[in-house]
Length: 93
Image (cartoon, rainbow, N blue to C red; front, side):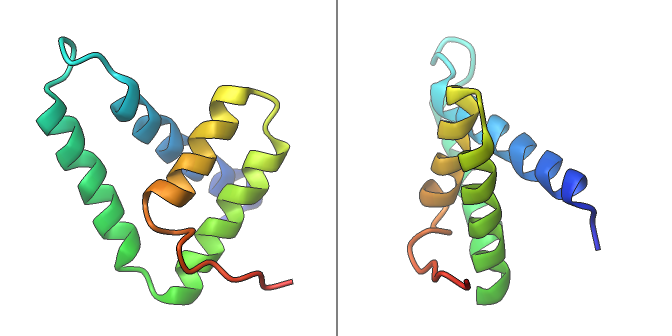
């Protein structure tokens, strides 16, 4: 098991990279490459068992609610919804 700090660092790092790929100028990175990387991340996350996808979605939402930086908040929300984690998310509370 990872600590809360490690889980947070991983999900925020992934969200940051995904947001970078979404926002980067076409002159800096070929859009086809950016799309391929985003599709790969989405694919990997979609292969998780449903309970794990729910857990990652919950972690993204929790970290987004706690984020004081609007950019990071949006990156976390985008990771959840843009990678399909939010499509079948169920509240577990």
